[in-house]
Length: 327
Image 1 (spheres, rainbow, N blue to C red):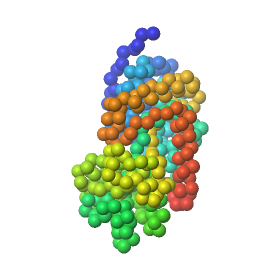
Image 2 (image 1 turned 90 degrees about the vertical axis):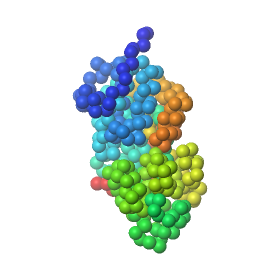
Image 3 (image 1 turned 30 degrees about the horizontal axis):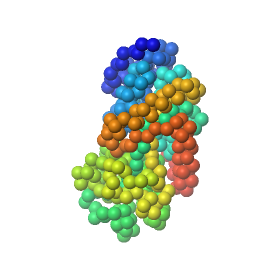
């Protein structure tokens, strides 16, 4: 079989304008020729960067043009709910993450999808850590020093999060609960305004994805004090893990993965999964992901399914105990 010519990735706005709505897609016209990689977040963010890195390599290995289709809204919920109704013909893949599949279904009554039953897991793409950081203007140099400050000064107890009900929200909750301090989450509309206020010392502390903090931390404008995950992050080896500091519940990494519509053939799922494993092993993938604070990760579909189940089991009692609901 001759390999089809590969088309370059187009800007997300061009793609979104050219493609029909998800519900109106015509899979018979695109199967075997074009695969849409649906991303529930805006172009230019870290999720979009991961999608584009893998899309470029996937099209080389799948003999198809892979285009990134950004459909932001409600923390990825809109894209996920539209995606699950697509035909299982290989014409679309979904970039999912911990928030869409683990915390959002547990915090929002408006979520109609089942994160386990309504999607066919394909492969993880990357893992990333969540970090707690303080403004460089704050005196705390360690997590213990920040917690001591929060005990002594109520104004130091506020911490910014990129969205209410996000995993950073509950990371802060776990820290405060264990220490007997009522840390107060302040939700922002994304990581960019959160980082701006943190650098300006408009808020004393923040919890967000490590990648969003990386540049400011290296520039000395903020100070990361702890990261989630089973080991120290390669991009900031000087920052201890929460586990090292006694917060064992925060020992897992967050993730980004690929999903197909339910009912997609196992042969197709396995083919894409194998391609992801090849891409994850490339030095260029490691370097590209490191630029946005991610690490490459692969694995078979069952491993991704167990990752989703494991995170649901981890966060459910924490979220229930917190009493938090978005709606």
